[in-house]
Image (tube, rainbow, N blue to C red; front, side, top):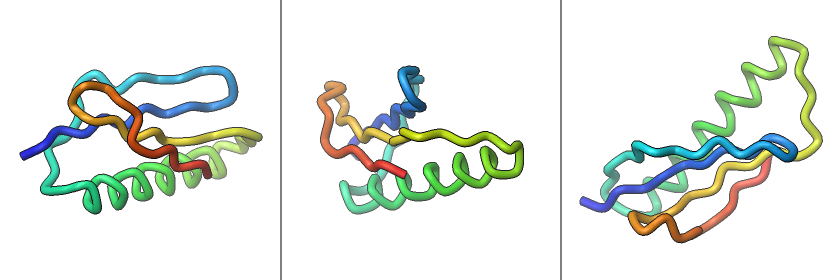
Length: 71
């Protein structure tokens, strides 16, 4: 099963996912990126944090960027 990494960018700061998650396929990775983005946006909203530029980048097991999911 392939491993996908979900790096989170807020403004100029990027938090790298060093663990990754094994998922069945790329479609599942996109769903996971959307879930993480929704969770982050909800948490930020509840804490009164506004961010002008946020994204989740999905990378493959070689850390190659596959897609960037802005939110």
